[in-house]
Image 1 (cartoon, rainbow, N blue to C red):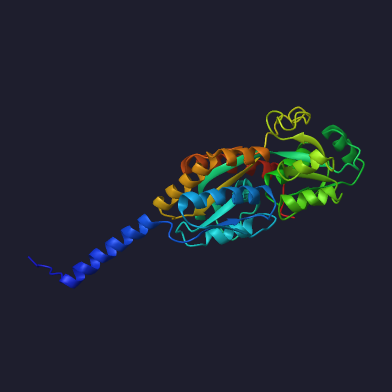
Image 2: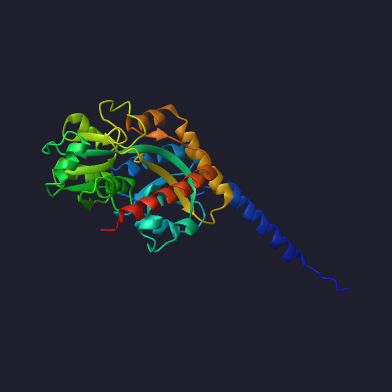
Amino acid sequence: MMKIRIGCSAIAAIILSLTTAAALAQAFPNKPVRIIVAFAPGGPIDVVARLVAIKMQESLGQTVIVENRPSTTGNIGSAFVAKAPPDGYTLLANSSAFAVNVTLTPNAGYDAEKELVPLVQIATQPNLIVVHPGISAKTVAELIALAKTSKLSYASPGNGTTPHLTAENLFRTLAKVNVTHVPYKGAGPAAAAVVAGEPEIGSLAVTAPIPFVRSGRLRALAISSTKRHPALPDVPTLVESGFPTIQDYTWVGLFAPTGTPADAMQKLNASVNRALQQQDVRERLESLLFEPIGGTSEQFADYVKVEIVKWGKVVRDTGAKVD
């Protein structure tokens, strides 16, 4: 029988290697963590990411840097994170556009289902149909009637966002009217455009337009939640407005590159859940009409799978394209 002899130096090197690997695993994070926001500053994804990042720093003991890489689809930021090292130090903050884009932009330069893994769902909120006060319509029915005789357009936070698909489903598929889509690089710029009257209509997650609705600079016609929102009790749902199949939400979640170590995933997930349990964070989210969610990575992954199926059908039904 052949005997294999291992020298003392080799044994020492093996022990050192194992010890170093264990130390590195235990040390996560040992440098700043970056959250790449897939949309522009000022929109709901950006606001929520920055709110949570501050609290993550406290529990992780490291700086959490928020960086915007905006595009109308969110794909620029998503592709950047998909190609990042899977070490837990680069995360993606995206919206439900993540689920929409699987069908809407299947050749985006990355594979959402293979290269990115859901980390945690942070919060969710409904979408809002708003108009500039110069528009005469006071209800969705009146807006649709106006669209049949006038050339109208609507702003969304970008191609592939759920506000985009909510509007396409409402106008194109269900109401059978042609309202031109104008995508922006985020909800903030889109809301500002509608306030300026160009375009006249907005389909936006509720955070961005709500200050303008409260000040009278925008008029809210309908909300996409299953029931009226307590902050907007006079605004009917799209279900009440005659569109029972539209019950849509814009959610915010964090993703990591596939292959990120389980230990890092667990620590990051726990840091977000701890943030969402803090009263000041919950109050701030609720003031923005967000519902805090949290939960495990597995729960978020299951939800994302359902959302991909749902929005895939809407994309096919509406014939939505990247403008």
